[in-house]
Length: 312
Ligand code: NDP
Image (tube, rainbow, N blue to C red; front, side, top):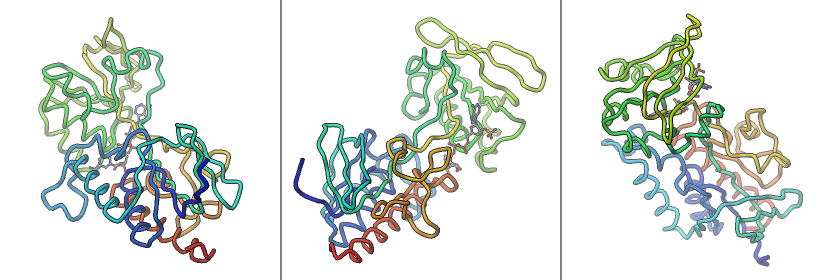
């Protein structure tokens, strides 16, 4: 165990975590940021980000996160490429353990652990995971060049990924479980205007079949009650995300869905000195810019907390 008690430990390295780090470092809080398993978070698997202000021509997600990281590092944030696996928020000094077993102590903790892709929960989905089944078109679409694929979901992610896949694949079957899409109107129009995307309404995946990799899927039309098979080489799942908050269950108030609950107009959790930001606590907006905004709020809340305690 190190005898140092850090002023501020930030868990997570998406827009929320790095923004918190920029503000905390510039406030002389000497923050230490643990990146987690996927440094840079969800934007590392995104292509063009066109809606983050300040980039009139758009920017690639990984480049944007590199910029965030460099800006946090420029002001002295200590960035550690490890995952946090356990926390103990029982004392006035908070304890955190990294995957290496090292115990870290902190007066304040900012949680920005983000969210991860949801899965359908089919047994056959597990069987073909990474062998034809993927939750990231940008990561894996390349492997399906010139082939026919299906994508499940009807939100902005599914629409964006269908659009991305349509440029690589001969045909993209978009499987929508209701008779309407949740995606924004502009994204719906983009999908509908793409000739090699076929939308299958009221359609749910029942089984994924194949040999070593996916060869076909069995789908059910919940309106006509008909089942049919579709020949595809890949199935992309784009049905939303789950917040990465399991390790905080014992300590922090959260919604049934796992989103951390913060006090109104703040990032304060139910534990003094522990603050939550980004997709781990926001199930409404879930944008890079809003995550960055709450990361900033968390650093300001942490700074006020440390000042009131006479720690900085
Ligand atoms: P959403 O929660 O918005 O959408 C999930 C979709 O998956 C819904 O259409 C839902 O159907 C469907 N779904 C959920 N479970 C199942 C299931 N078991 N079987 C079949 N379909 C299922 O998630 P997204 O990841 O699409 O988006 C998250 C947030 O990020 C949103 O706020 C979105 O606007 C934003 N976003 C913005 C982008 C941009 O602006 N460029 C890009 C990507 C995301 P149903 O509608 O029936 O519930």
